[in-house]
Length: 103
Image (cartoon, rainbow, N blue to C red; front, side, top):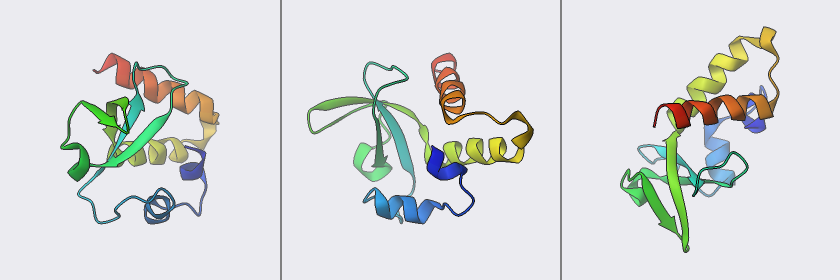
């Protein structure tokens, strides 16, 4: 998350760093199941997941949180409201609460 709160960050570079297909229709963000804020995230092309809610990768079960476009919009909105000065932890908690309450 911190990466996207920096001025010089961008989606394409992130995809390259994570070995993701930049040309994918959408990258989805999953969390290792069961959902807990401290669990690892996984980034997968929708072509790989088929848009499923639950996805298994290398024997590990993941649950879909949201797509990358939603994430980028949320981070952009937070960056536009710098007066709040939320920490990365607080941003993660807000996004996690959103997922849990809107599941």
